[in-house]
Length: 92
Image (cartoon, rainbow, N blue to C red):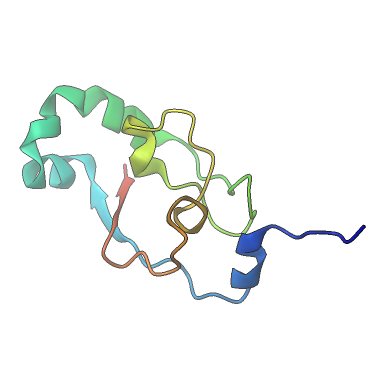
């Protein structure tokens, strides 16, 4: 039997995921349809950073927790991409 490493392990030397970081207020100005979820986004933004349970290399992608509340994976493990520069991450 051969040992299988998680597929994301090939990104060990990948550059830092280069998100566009936004505050809750900046995000809601850009996407006002989420205003009713302001409290939820503020809670998400306040969560401590933690590593992806799949690859352990990148931080959990917090902004998707409005649709994936039990998300414990990074951008790469969710999307299969390493370049997050066109995507958002929320910060306090």
